[in-house]
Structure formats: C-alpha cells, structure tokens
Image (cartoon, rainbow, N blue to C red; front, side, top):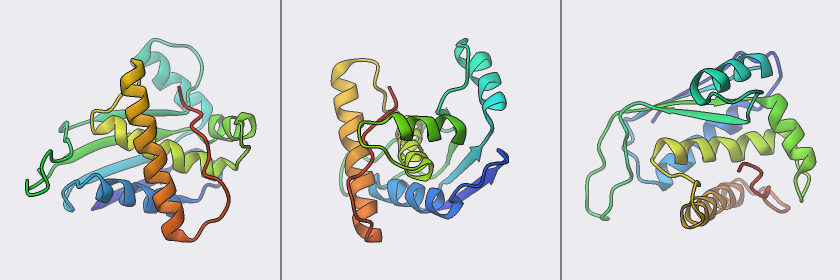
Length: 165
C-alpha cells in the first residue's frame, strides 16, 4: 500500500499513527495492496477554502475526501480487488482538537485524527452517512476498524466516539 502523509498544517500530529491506521483500514477493507492514498493535513484556513470550494459551506470542517478511481471493497472473498488511486483525504487538526474536547468521551487531537482518517477512507470507498441506514453501517464499520487497530496496537481505554456527522 502506498500511502503518503503530508502535514502542511504547522501543527504537530502523529503522522505515523495516521499512516498506520490508514494502512490497517485499507487492509481490513481488502483493498489491493498496490493501491495509492494521499493524506494531507492542513490548517483551518486551508480547510475552510476547500470546504467553500467543494461543498459550498462556510467554515473549516474536520475531514474531506476526494476519490479518484472510485475503488470499492471486493464483494466476494475470492474476488481479486482492483488496484488504483484511492484519492486524497484532507484532515484539519484544529477542528479535530476541538471535536476531541467536545466528544462524549473526551479524547486527544491525535485520536480524533485517527478516527477521521478511517472516516475519510470509508468515504473514498463509497460509504456515506446521509441516510440513517447508511450512517449506521458506516459508523459501525468505522468503530470496528478503529477498535481493531487500537487492540492490535495494545492501546487501552475506550475508542473515541464518532464526532463526525
């Protein structure tokens, strides 16, 4: 899996954890190991510009996903996953920090960025949360991936509750 993490935010973030959880999520979703992903960490001003440009919504947001080849997880166990460019995930640590503080189970900015990375990966793979059934599926899968990664890393304590809407 080729994953690039580029921190342009000026904020110190755990880039290795972002890389690790992205790799874990893609492996768990059975995405071809030669597929490519880019994760960009930006400041609030840059995120606000993207949010206005692409969503026509004011203010910065936590995560945005820009799919390229519209890859999807294989539907059958024996099916060979296609290889390609997944796309870009853009994260904003300033928003993530505030969301972590405001969450029902308060957690760190880095824990929120890990959750948002998985959220972004799922969006790149075609998952969404616009309708209740889709939200239940996506957030359930998101929690399972974050919990699995945390267990594999031996991290203790509760996983961050979803703060993205």
